[in-house]
Image 1 (tube, rainbow, N blue to C red):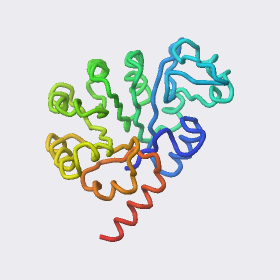
Image 2: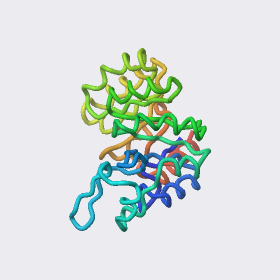
Image 3: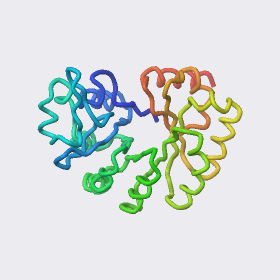
Image 4: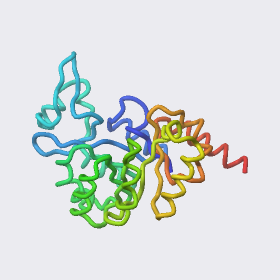
Length: 233
């Protein structure tokens, strides 16, 4: 499965980009933040910059954010996304700890069956699991020191997946990277690949046998590549 990182095309993180992705059969990934009036919204950063001025998401109401054209007008509520795309695969990335209070209930209320909730923060993972024993939780790796935590997270929090940057190849080498992935899979943990700067189209063919899904900046190109690889076998 391919998940479109921030949607498909411009403007990213907008209802239009998410609609475009779902229509093409991709899952959708977005970061979630909580506004001053308690709305959960899809936005990559905790602030938006307009004409050089920073506006903090957490200090403004949803209505105030929407009034900040043109960027603010594109911001979507998570509730809208769940309602608009009931059958989509969601990767909801949590960076804001305050989101934990409301997100699990929102997922339950909209009966979202295909939602993977990810974070780089172990404390947020713990809080999410305390709120909902059934959530599909994913731990996102952003540094090497996170790797030894994986067995404990599986044991205590029953994480569903590990989100692994293919950039890790440049740090540990290709052979060691594959060995680590096999170790993760041996624990019954799914693997979702993502890329910070590494070339997805170069590395994914070499890792396709170890990945369960791909969180891609180039979902159309990745799908074309995977289809071509499938035909060659």
